[in-house]
Length: 189
Ligand code: F6P
Image (tube, rainbow, N blue to C red; front, side, top):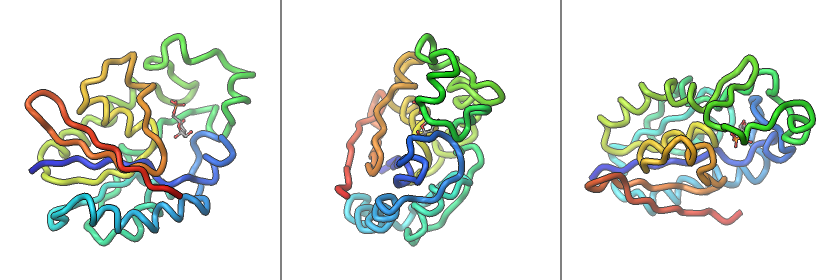
């Protein structure tokens, strides 16, 4: 039976500092998540014989997938939302220097970067290939996971950029007649 598994990367050094974007390594807690993921996957996925793991091309997702003994593929399309001139800034620094995104978060495009709308387009090929496979575990980022989650759960443009996708949580999506059933497995670290 078809299943889609989604997870953000483990906590990164940038997450700890509240900085966005970048290509940081995992923090100690993030590495603990990466270490616990293989046994969680074995426990909840069941038949892993056809499991493929997809990551982005950024360090934090590749490190998170490192201990998973399955076929892997890196997708540039799964990289985090490009935050342009704000890359590497904290949310406080952004709030002090730029207009709020909350007016229209879906369409807000970072200067020199992307919007959630751009991201949805960028992820189209990922979704096409995903539809053809039986079991895929995708390890990506807050914004890219939100877009995939919204596609399968039928969230609209207002809801998508605010979907709650916590760290250190494996999300199971099971297609049903209309949409998907969801289940969240949180790892205590
Ligand atoms: O804070 C982690 C992060 O993945 C950033 O790199 C990214 O800009 C952000 O989340 C996306 O979330 P939001 O659109 O809510 O800022």
